[in-house]
Amino acid sequence: MNGALLSLLLAAPVQALEVTIEIDPVPLRAGQSLDLVVRVSGESRQRDDIKVLGLGVFTLLQTGGTSSSTQMSFGGGARSVSHNSVLRFRLRAPNQPGEHALGPVKVRAGNQTGQSAQVPVRVLGAGQTQQLSGRARGDLFIDFSVEPPQPYVGQQFTISSYVYSRVRLEGIADLDYPEAKGIWWEQLSNPSRAGSEVVVHAGRRFRRHKIGSIAGFAESSGPLLLSGGEAVVQVLQGDHLFAGLNNKTLSANPVAVEVLALPESISATQVGRYSVRHAYVPTQLNLGDVIELKVTVKGDGNIKSFALPELKAPPGLRAFSPKREVVMNEGTAQIGGVLTWTLPIQATLPGRHRIGGSLVRWFDPHSGKLRQAKVGPFEFEVIGKLAVLPEARPGAAAEPSQIRGPIGGFRSKRPSGSWLRHPLLALLLFFLVALAWWPRRESRAKPEEGTSLGALEEALEKVLGVPVRGLGRDELLRHAAAALGPQHSAELEGLLKALDAAAYGPSEQVAEGLKTELLHWLEQNR
Image (spheres, rainbow, N blue to C red):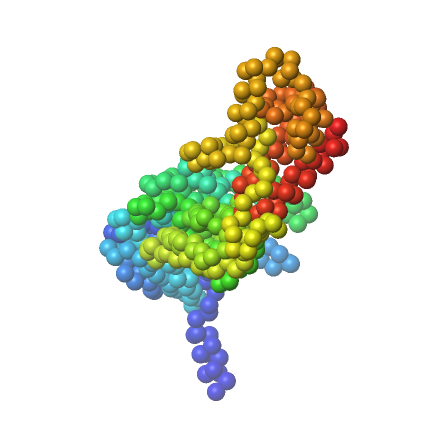
């Protein structure tokens, strides 16, 4: 029985052949011919016989020649012999585009057998873009891939750089991505030391190292050819005793990108996968309260440039300058983040108020559809009463008891004819008559006894040294520049403008406070 078992073991084939296949070109067009090279290495001296070619959907057109060689090596006092064969075949790709499997190829030589790995082959249709960088060039080359190959205008496409190596790769010294005009770039990752994995590329085993990726956003539609990509890599060369690092420059073929046009009325800044929401607004406010209208946009895309519509405040509400804050995502393959848009609003008049809503629109490139979200409307009631002067009777309309306008001028935005009701009109007419009859030197004299000057006019005259009644704003500021200097003249102009604006506002207390501040400033600059 032992003899029978030994005979079976001797008759059983030994898995000692190493079989690899190479394909050229890849990828290829539907119906295009390609070359298949089968490399066999083993100890048997007998002729290699292809048992299974593993064509699948591919068609055999021609069987090419065969070449062989023998290598002998000595180690540890023993001799080893390796016989290598190369078998060539001519194939035709199927007419159906897609990824099709080729192999495994099974080979027998004497009592030794072996088989190759199954290789996926990409077959392109007539309208698909062929990447030119996929062909293996020796034992070390660089390849740039793009995803998606047909992005929309404003949609992120990612270019990833890979180094394929059958030698020992130690590091990356420099990396330049392919470029083209009309693209805005954003760096994603650029590791100093590449990670790797074992892959089969064009029928050969390589160690693939991803050395970086970058995001691009095209500004216009049409075909793009990105060129100029290269990397400087460090490889280990030599034996164990005299090994050293050597820099090699690897250049890549161009990468083709077909940029698709956007629908009408959509701009490149409105492309991405977003969600939009707005914060809750209270239904009741107290007079003078400040609230914030907040809109939040979250998602993937060029979120820094995402455009939001303007919300206009109606009369009775005061809108301040809006604020934009963007927090970008970190460590992700897609550019994106959170955009927060805040608009402060102050209630200045009591009653019911409404801020109209607006639509926010964007284009989702993954679904190819327009999206929109409604922001607002915002409705609320302002509770409270405007301040009334102490001497005013209950129920009577509040009337100003003194002049609160600018010195020597009228408010620039008054309605037509309102100047006829200005309290200074009678006084102005009186001085015009006096100037017509009195000598010029009398016009520069101080007012007669019995003529009362307001506190603000007295303070201005003490500081400027000239009468201020009847002076226009420009004349007043010229005297201020001569008496106080340019810097203090500019400060006085700012205080007068603030008093002018507050004098016709809804709050009497604000105007009185600014007047007191102006008197204090004049007292300090006497």
